[in-house]
Image 1 (tube, one colour):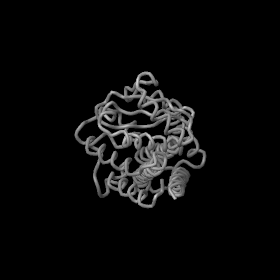
Image 2: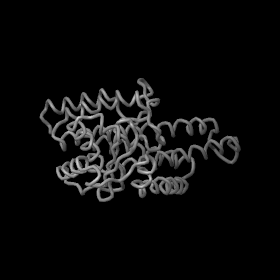
Image 3: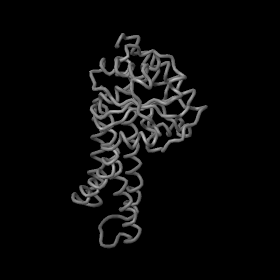
Image 4: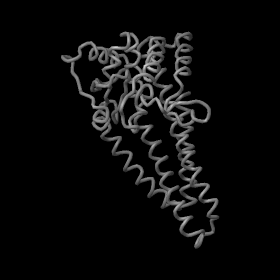
Length: 284
């Protein structure tokens, strides 16, 4: 079901890019802008393991430096039928974790120093399993594709606005006011779809993490603990890497109502409710 939801949203994002790109720049223009956006995003995707570790100031560790953590990751990745990822620890006191890497063979699982002190071992297992869920479903690739298409729509929108402003509709049969409105609405719509895909990826990683760890309730308890602590302990991190964390480390980007559409993470209470329902079904 989660796969189908993401597929439908990716199809919608593609349709938005094709429609808006074809309207403004024609087929060749849309393809060119897509290639430019892909070049920018796939650079981040290809080198994501190194870039994100540097962003979080994380240090790679081995079995000698943190045997309990390393062995926990090794045990869970075997349950998930995944290659052993690189294990790293970021120095932040905010309890959090993330996974990155362009494929399972180049994956990284990183936890903060704060999470090692804040969570019970069973809760930490749930968090590690969640991150392995991201790796198993290749969410880094899905997120990069969504960011590429949303970025291409944004670039086309900027070009459309400037064209409408400076030409005033001359040498064109398009209404400049309609073009300006469309150039504002289209990138917002693309961003909303991109963030919706990110939220669906989190739900999918939660469900898979509950199965890998064999205890959805432990992950639910961890999420509640992390959400409370993230509000009290700030984390200095580039917003470009914030969406990777298991809970949003930037407490300023929260809220309900319309603001929910611009959240990269689902509300924690909704994630917890789904995990409890999963546990009640015995789906683990």
